[in-house]
Image 1 (spheres, rainbow, N blue to C red):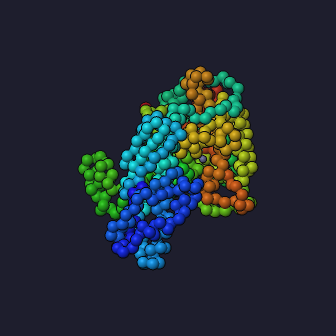
Image 2: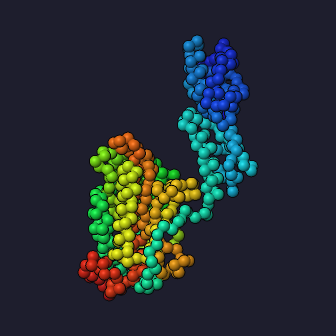
Image 3: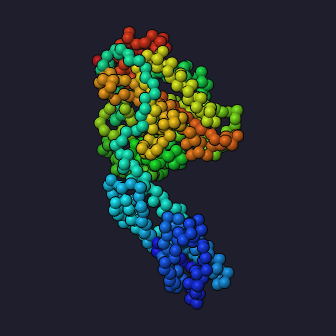
Length: 499
Ligand code: SER
Ligand code: ZN
C-alpha cells in the first residue's frame, strides 16, 4: 500500500526516518515472528510522509498505518508538537490465494483493477480515504471475493431438500388448474401483475382457512395478535440480512419530496390536460426509497424488542400478525394464484430459550398435521430445506446446519394434480415453519433474563397457497369438499352476476 500521512505542519528539520526505526515490533504484534507488516519505502515532502507498506495475511497495511499514526503522534507530538492530520492511501494492491478457482471473472465496487489467474487474484484500489481504511472495507472486499466464488460453484445447485414426512396418496376431485376455472366463475379476478381481487366465494374460502388457523392453531397454542407495520425500512433489512440480497424483488416505497401543493402543480395540471399521469415528472419529485413493502413479514416485528431484555414470565413469547399483505416482485409472465406479487399471510413468531423454541415448533407441526389431515384432507408432505432466512439472504449453498434438523426450515408442500404426476411435477410450498436459532435475537440484540441464549422461530401461512392447494385437490364443487371444512364454511355467499 502506498499511502500518505498529512501532518499538522512542515516536517523540515525532523528526521522521520530515525523515528520510524524505533517502531520495534509495533508492526509484528498479532502475527507470527517475521510475518507482520513492513515499511518498504519512506520519504518526506513538506507536511507529508509517504510510506509503502507491505504485509502478509496477518497485519494488513491499513491496520499497520493506524499503528504508525499513533506511534508518530506520540513521538512527534511530544518532541516537535506535530500531529497527524489525515491518512490517504494512494494505491492499495492486494494479492490473494483463493480456495477455489473462479468460474467466471467479475469486478467489484471500489476495485480499479481485478485480475484472476488460476487460484490467484490481484486487485488494485486507488485513492482510499480514512473511512475506507478505518472501517475495514478492504477486509470486506477480500471476504466478498471468496463468497462470490463460492456462490459461483453453487449456482444452479438446488436448495437443500430432504423428505421428512408424507401423507398417504389421496384421490382428487379433478386435475384442472384452479386459477383458470376460478377466473371463469368470477371467484377471482386478475388486476395487473400478480395481484388479484377475491370475489365473495374465494374470500369465504380464505376466511374459512383463517378461522381454522385461529381456532385450531393460534388459540390452543396461545399466540397473541399483534399488528406489524407493512413498510419495512432499511434499518430492519440491514438487521434481518435481507439488505444483502433482495433488491430485485422489492416493491420500493418512496415519499414525496414535499407535501406542498405548489410543488406538485405541474403534475396536477399535466394530468388535467392530458388525462395521463405524468410519471416522468413524478420521478424527480419523490425521494429515494425508505425501504419497501413487507417481504418476509416477521422482520417488521423485531424493532418492538430491539435492544430489550425479555422477562422470563413472557417466555416463550408467542405473537402473530395478519394485518396486511406482503409484496414481492415476481419476474416472468402472469402466474396463477399460487405465485403472486401481493399476498396474504398469517405469520406466527415465537421466541424463548432454545428448548422453548423447539417445543413450540413441534406443537405447531402437530397442529398443522391435524388441520391438513383431519380438516382439509390434503395430500401433502414436509421437507427439511435451506433455512428461509439464508435463502432470502442469497446464502443458498453456504453450509447451513440443516442436517442437524434443529435450526432451519421445514417446508410444507402440496401435490397439485394439474401439474402432472406426483413424481415428476413440482409440488407447491404452501407454508413453512422454522427454528431461526439466534439469527433474529442476535440481529436485533434481544437478551434473555437469565442472560443465556435466546432463540426464535416463525411460521408463515400463505392464504393464496392454501387456496391453490385446496382448490387444485378438491375442485370447485362444494358438494365434494371435506365435511370438516364445510362445517366451518357456513352459508354459501351470494354470487355477483354480470349481464
Ligand atoms: N418469514 C418467513 C418467510 O418469509 C415465514 O413467513 O418465509
Ligand atoms: Zn418469519
